[in-house]
Length: 165
Image (cartoon, rainbow, N blue to C red):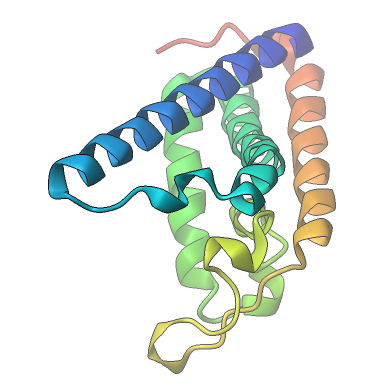
C-alpha cells in the first residue's frame, strides 16, 4: 500500500511541475502579447527561493492527497475520498470563521500555512475577520503528522482496500 501511495505522490509531483511550467510559459506568452515587460523574470532572489517553495507546495499537496487516499482505502471508494476531501476543505473554511485557533491545526489550513506570508496568507482576512495561521515551519511538522497518520491508516486498513469507482 505504501508503494502504491509513493507512486501516486510521484504522479502528483510530476503534475505539479508540469502545471507550473505551463503556467509560467503561458504567463510569459500572455505578457509578450499584451506588451507587458518580463524584465523581472530573471530575478535571482525569486529564482533562488523557487526550489524551496516548490518543495513546500509539493509536500502540502501530497498530504492532502494522502487524506483522500486514506479515506478511499477505508471506504473502498474513490468517490468517498474525493467527496470527503472536498467536504473537509470547505468545512475547514467555514469553521475557521468560528474556531480559528483550532482550525489552523487541521490538514488543509496547515497545508496552506506551509508557504507562509509570502503566499499572501496570514494576518487578517476580509471584512475585519482575524485569520489565525501557523508559522510555516510549524505547519511543516503538522502537515508531516497528517501525512504520516493518513499513510498509517491506509496501511492498517489495506485488507479492506479493493477500491471501486
